[in-house]
Structures are given as structure tokens and as C-alpha cells.
Amino acid sequence: MEIGSLGGNLMGIIPLGDIVLYLTPLHLFMFIAILMFTFLIAISRTETQVEARFGDLKDYKLSVGLAEFKTRRFLAIICGIATAGAMITGDLFNFILFVALTGIVNIGIVSAVRQIDVLNAAFQYGLIAMMASLPLFGGGAIILAATGTLSLFELAKFTSNSMVLFGSILLLIGVAGETGIAPFFATKAEMFRTPGSPFILIIHLSSLFMIIRAIEIFLVILT
Amino acid sequence: MDLGEFWNKSANPDRIPRIFALILGLSLIAGLFVPFSLNNDQIYSRPAPQEQMLAGDRIAPYDRGGEILQTPGITAAQYPQYSEKIGMINSYMSPIAYNLKENSPYFGTSIYSSPGGLIDEILYYTRGFDTILESTILMMSFIIASWLALNFTMSRKKKND
Image (cartoon, rainbow over all chains, first blue to last red; front, side):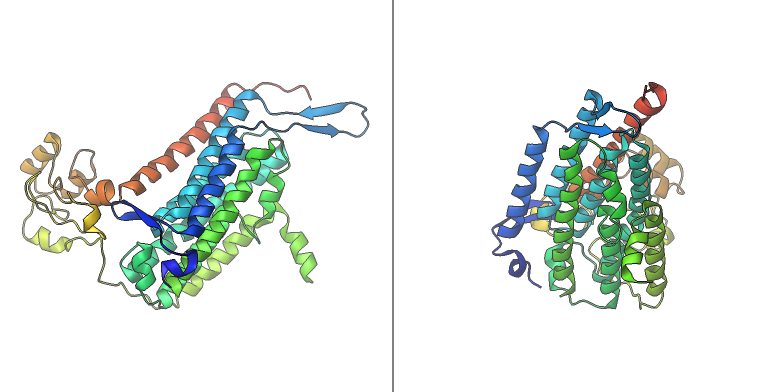
């Protein structure tokens, strides 16, 4: 499928050697939306949760310390920028790297909490993200072997065969694992029970955007 | 087992990696039945290793030829119009790598992998943005790991509650 037929008219490209970023209305909109959200996160503060417990009349505040707050904010900003980069990239391997970066940073955002349940869920998510790097990069390698190129502009011209289809399925499993979409969402749902709301939200938002972009890339490659 | 029960069971974080591993394993097994064939029209090709080795090339199998800043070596690019100086520093070798090459014909691959050996322009020029991203991924993992090591192992405070 032609690149322009999915995202709208091709408005321009940003060539970085062989890696060509391209701008269509759809990609530009997603790029700006995620950057705006990242900016909102960068200037916001974390929430504080109040817990009541059995057999006790006191309220327990669960707040985020300053050092943890700073680390989380930094990782959330990197996550937002990585997602924004993945929105406009025109290269398959570049997209895979952006997905891997988002996966690692997502684990980092929750890895510093002090609740055992949340840490346990983050550990399971980390296991999936580690396993997912095999199909993620393997799928990209199979597509490269079958087509001989990684640029989406060239892949759009290539007629698909069963090897490309298999590579795409592996890539889909990899993206699903790194971003933690259904049916692997349970770990992420558990991770959200920690204070620090706006930073946690970028985990969800980046997954959503990555999946939209991944579907578009599959359409470009396969049809 | 109905669907609701399945969703409830799969909502347990401990089970998720196993489900993922199962799906991944099944699809990899299915991959054994997919006909695989390498498309020989690769953009990032390398000259066949055996040719250079049989010819007695000292930096085989990765010799791409060329003269530094004078004549370009063999480096392919998807979009040559965006990489105008391609191939110009292909043959640069650091003094250590150069001496290795002069003294022994058997260190081609180690020259290539050592820092300051042959410069792979695909890594550092045509696909340089990928290299930046790769090192960013590494840097982020080190940041996370060192933050955890500093705060959760070295200077861990006892909490009251």
C-alpha cells in the first residue's frame, strides 16, 4: 500500500541518511499530540494517595519522594519523546528500536516504587519485555532477509509473501509484548496501583500510539 | 471453561509471562513450516567473505576498499542522494589496527570489531540514527539499573510502616 493512502498527503520528509522520517497529516497529528502530552507531564506533579487500613483509624499517605519523582519524570519524558519519534519514522528497524526504548523506559518508570505487589507486576512485565525482544528484532530481521530493505517507502512497493507475513506476525507479537496490550495487560493493570499518576499514564498512552503506528506499518508492508 | 473464567485467570500477573511464552513458542514452531529463502537483492550486502580470504586480503572479510577522503569504497545506501560523502572514510584504520594488519594476516575480524578499527559507514553514517537510538537504549537501562542499585540496595532506609 502506498504510504500516502493511509496517512494523507505526504507533506515532507526529513532525511537522516538512509533513515527517512516522513510527515503526513496523520503522523504529524500523532507526533504533536504525544509531544503536547509529554509537555503536560513534564510540568505536572505527582498525585498522593491516601489509604485507610483495617483495625486502624489513621490515614496513610502514599506520596512520591523528590528523588523518585525526578527519575520518573525524566523517564516519562524520554518515553514521550521515543513515542513521538516512532510516530514519524520511515524505517522499520528504527521503529523497532523506538519500541524497545519505550519498553525499557516503561519498566523504569515503575521499577522504583516501594509496593511489593506493584514491583511484582513490574517484574512480570519486565520478563515479557525481555522475551518480546526476540520476536521484535527477529521479525525485523526476517522482513529484511525477505525483502532486502528496511525503508518503508521501498517495503511499500514490495509484494508480500509468506516469509514477510511470518516476519510481520513475529513483529506483532514483539510489539504486543513490549507495549503490554491484550491479552498481556494484567501486569500493566497491576502496575497502575501506585501513586504517581501522570507519569504512569504515559505508559498507556505510548502503548496506544505504538499499536496504531504498528498497524499502519503492517498495512504498508503486507498490502 | 467459559471465556469469563479464562479472562479472570489470565488477569493474574504471574501467568502472563507464561501465556506470552506459550504464544511465542507456538508461533516459532509454526515458523518451521514457513518457506524461508534469502532475497539476494540485499541493500546492506557485504562482499562474499570467502573471496577476500582466498585472495589473501589482510583485512578480509570486511575490506571495502577506497582511499581515505579521496576515493569512495564500496558502501551501499538506500538513498545515496542523502549520503553524499558515502564511502570516503571506509578504509580509515587507527595506528594499532594498522600495525595489526601489517604484522599478521589473520586478524581481519578482530580489527573490524575493535574500536578505531575499520569504520563501518552503514553503522555510523547511513544508519547513524539507529546507532544513536541503540546507545540511548543502553544508557536508559544503565540509568534505571544504577538508580535501583543506589536507592534499593546501597542506601536503603528502614520504613516505619
